[in-house]
Amino acid sequence: MLELIPLALTLVTLAGYGAALSRLRRRGDRWPVSRAACLVAGSLCVAAAVLPPVSSHDEFFPVHAGQHLLLGMIGPAFLALSAPVTIALRTLPPGPRRLLLRLLHSRLAVVLSAPATAILLDVGGLYALYLTSVYSVAERNDLVHAAVHLHMFLAGCLLSWAIIGVDPIRRRPGIKARLAALVIGAAAHDTLAKLMYAHNLPVGGGTITGRHAGAELMYYGGTIIDLALAIIVMAQWYQLTGRELARTARRSMSRPGQPVHHLDPAARPE
Image 1: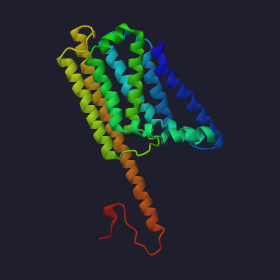
Image 2: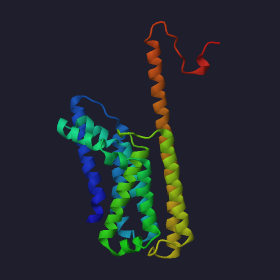
Image 3: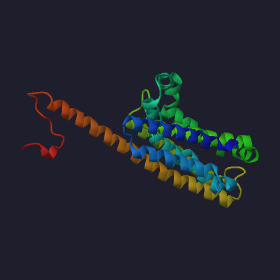
Image 4: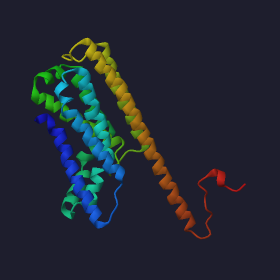
């Protein structure tokens, strides 16, 4: 039952999100359908990772590797894009809203949401799991097994929130810093997969063929996911730049006697 904690956390978020959507609808406010769809997609990924048939066969390392991608990378990415904190701030009563704002502005939240911290917790935890005997212990101990899954999920959520999240974060790093963090995290993840393949790790991961297959799945699957995250970051940069250009154009047009700067160089008069 302890292994279902990530799913329980996701379902609580899903229930709260649904209540918030209902409150917005009653007020006549709109909310992007794409964000709600991302929450559903993330919840399905988490559910697929911790429920049968995946959970009932995760003693096979290739299955565990797929579980790792769902629980620690794909699911958290979708959840980060659903903006759960933003919708909570828009719909919570004043008291809980002030409490949430204090938590978001706290020093602990700033430290945890920093890309460097997120990378250390996420990738560092994977190195400790697969390059030591922790994986073997987790296969024999249900409590350690559940703790590994919970850490994998929470660390993945932190990393996704820091790099592609759309919720308000105090001192959110710029696009260059987020891309740099993504490159560092992806390189560390790929290096880990290569080390596992080269040294037949992890200990207790079954046959050598199975360990190699799992390492390959982590390498190629992680690369595809990291590429998708990079595309998301660049798309966010494009949207942000477009909004800034639009604001600049509106300010220019609102000032009488001021020249209007065309956004499209090709549209400038010769």
